[in-house]
Image 1 (cartoon, rainbow, N blue to C red):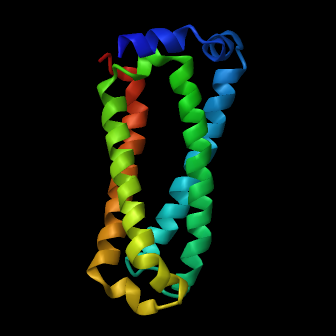
Image 2: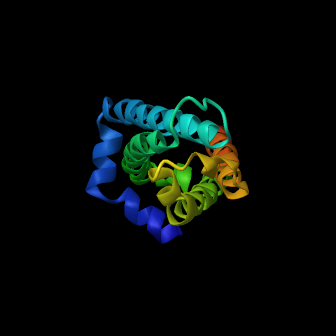
Length: 160
């Protein structure tokens, strides 16, 4: 890991990220915006799958999932730039490592949603919200992303 950190610290992109005073705050703004898109969309989708806001048709969840993917993509790009810009802070940090594991689990949760539930929702099947799998996916999503956000906020306060 030390060699990866050393290599990232020696890249031109690292030097650019760390030398431009406007860039890190700009990345933070975009990361926060992506998080708002991601979490806001997931909250609406997950709560609907849990049976709240029944007046919203289940097939509209797909629109929110598209926004969530856009938000995640923004966070992925800015997150990679954070890693390249300050690998000494992130790679050894236990909060960061746990956060990455939870993001992987959240990705598997989304994979299950796409593989097992999405087709039913796209067909407009309102009964899908009654299945245990749907409630589990939605509940797990809410818990995982809450933990991911908390861990992200903890990163600056954890040494290693």
